Length: 409
Length: 208
Image (cartoon, rainbow over all chains, first blue to last red; front, side, top):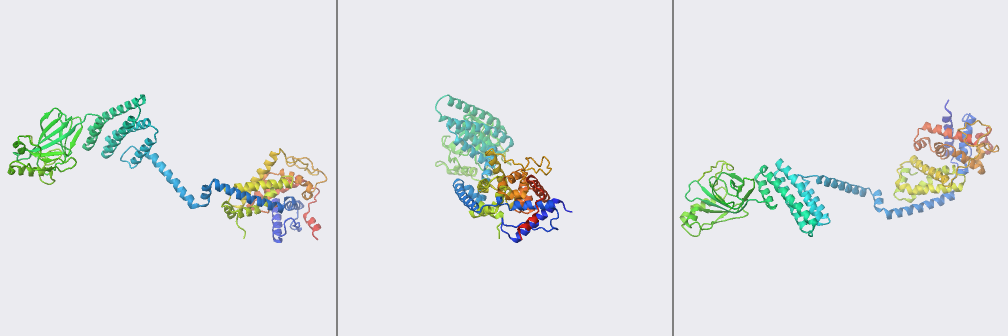
C-alpha cells in the first residue's frame, strides 16, 4: 500500500484534473465526489476536503475590481520607471537591449584594458631595442608635460636621466650598439630638457638645488661614459665622445684634415695632417673608421698631428680621425686632398686644391690653376684615385685594410 | 497559445508594458492567496499584494529568473518579506487564537497556541465563516514557510509537483511529504472536530 502522503497527492491530482476538465469557474466549484474506492480513508478524506475548501476559500480569491485597479497602477508605475530609467541611464538601457552596442562597448573596454596593460608594460621597459621603448618615451614625455611647473619637470628629467645612465651601462656590457646609441641620444635629450626647465626657474634656493643636481648628474655621466669607452665599438665611441663634449668634458675635435700625396714617391706615401684640439700623444690614426698603422712625424702641443702612411690598394677614402689613448675619438669626412709637388713648387704656401665636402664621402679635387700641367696631372689622377671608389688607390694599413702594407718614411 | 514565462520576462525587461500586465495577471492569484492566507483581513491582503507587485515591477530589470518556478519563488519571497515587514512595522504579532482541539492530543510542538473555542471545531466551517478567517490565518501562520509555500503553490494554485519542487529546490517526494504534513498540521491546528470532514457527504448534500 502506498504511503499516506502519496495517496493524498494522488487524490489531489485527480481532483485537480477533474476540475480542469470540467472547467468549473473558480469559486463555484462543487466539492469533489470521491467514490468509496477512491477515498477509502476518512483521514485522507478530511485532508482532501480541507485542501479543497482552502483552494476555493473566498478569502483567498482576488477581487476583480482590485485586480483591475492594481494592474492600472502597475502599468503606470512601470511606465514611470521606464521613463526615469531612460533619462537617468540611457546608456545602460541601450546596452541591455542592444547587443551589438554592448559588444562594441565591451570591445572598446577590452581595448582600453589592453592599452593600459601595454602602457604598464612599456613603463617597465628600459631597453631601447624593445618595441615598447618608443611607447615608454612617449609616456615619459606625457608625464613631463603633465607636470605642473618647471621644477617638477626638471626633477623628472633628472630622475629619468639617471635611470638612463644605468641603462647605458647595461647596454654597453651587452654589446647592443644601436640600442646604446639611442639610449645616449635619450640621455642627451633628458639632460637638455632638465637644463632648460631649470633655466626657466626664478633664481632661488630651489633653482640652485636643481642646478646642483644637474651638475652632479653631468659629472656622474662623464665618469660613467668615460668608464664605458673601452668596452665600445668605434661608432659608439664616436657617439659617446660627442655626448661627453655635450656634457662639458674635454674631448678631441678635428678642425681641419689635409692629405698630401708625396709626388716623388712611387709606392703611394701620403702625409696626413690633422688639426684640432685635445689630440693626445700616442693617438692612433683612423681611416674609414678603422685604426691603421701610421708614423707620427710631427706634433704641436695637442692641436696638430702629422702622420705619414702608405696608400695603395682599393680603399676609398671616406673619413679620417684619431683615437686618443683615453678612448675618445674624433673623426671627419671633410678632407682636403693635395699633392706635395704643388705644395713644394709654391713654397708650401698654397692652399689645398681639393674642395672638402663636410657631409659627403667623396672629396672633389681641383687641379692647380698655375704651374706645370705635365707634373700636376699625374698627381691629380692619384688624388682622384683616393677620392673615387674602385680607382685602385688606398692607404695600406694592416688593421683595417687587409692586404695593405704600412710604410714608415 | 500561452506565452512562456521566459518570453514574457524578456519582453517585460525590454519595456513591454503588456508583458508586465500578463505576468501580473498570471501570478496575482498565487501572490494574493499567499498574502491573504497570512493576514487577517482582505484590505490588508490587497495592500500588501500591491506592494509585492510594485516591487516586482521595480525589480524586473535586475531579475535573473528565467522560468516560472524561479519567478514564482522570487515573487513569494517578496511576499514573505512584505508580510514580515507588515507585522514588524505595526509591532503586531499574528493574532493568537486558541486553536487547540480539546478532543485531540496534539503534541506541544504542534500546538503552540491555546485551545480553540468549542463552538468552532470543524476546519471547513472555520474556512467558510468570514468571522473565523482569522483563526485560519493564525493557523497558517503557524506552519513553516516551506509548508505555507507548498500549501499555496500546490494546493491553492494547483502547480504540478515538479514545478513546486523546482521552486523550493527540493525533490518531488519531499514536496509530497510537505504537502501532507502541511494539511495535517493545519487540520490539527484548526481542530478537525468529530470527523465532520466528509467531503463526499457534503458534496452529496449540496449537489442533488
